[in-house]
Image (cartoon, one colour):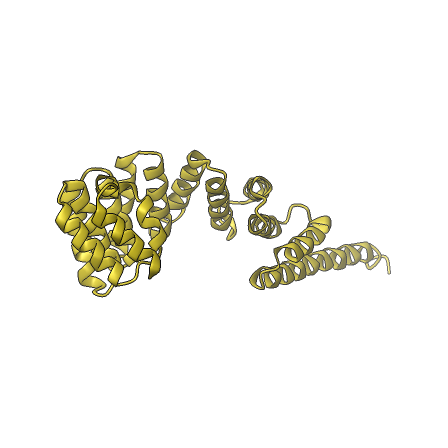
Length: 260
């Protein structure tokens, strides 16, 4: 009996800890189900119930960031992600999710500098993460750091050389950076690997507009519109088409695109 008595409180503590762990996991599972179902408010309530018992639970904090992000509460989402990162170890599975969430929330609040830092961190965590490279390229483009944008997009393209999204982004970055020959080669390659896409002729139209080749620009834009652009309403706002803004045929094509 003397040997067993110290085990009683220890056993009770173990049971209590197990219950907390199970409860936290249950809240995470339910919150994730709500998020997948599009009910971020219920997901947040589940997360907060779990955090009431385990305020330092990293996966719950990450999920709290996700729920708040979906609710449009970006400042609060960033705070949740930062709290998760402060408690994370270097091998924590939620580390990448927290950095990505923080980057995306930062972008929604037009904090490109923090978004860039977080995407750079993601690249350091996984050098093969082409999505992180591509997002880094886009942020660097916003910051007008064309060297960073080109370098990141080129690495992403080497990793996923047949991806329409990657190739179009690389081509556009080349175009903005004034590397028009490289842009043309990239969009031409895009047309070869994804033959029926509207992105390739659209990109070539951008290059032609920047080169001052109005006829080719209008021809390629017309080809892209015939293939159904994913965002036809954005054509008139595309700054790379600025040399064509006063062109009557360009305006006709813009109107045609809007009707597609």
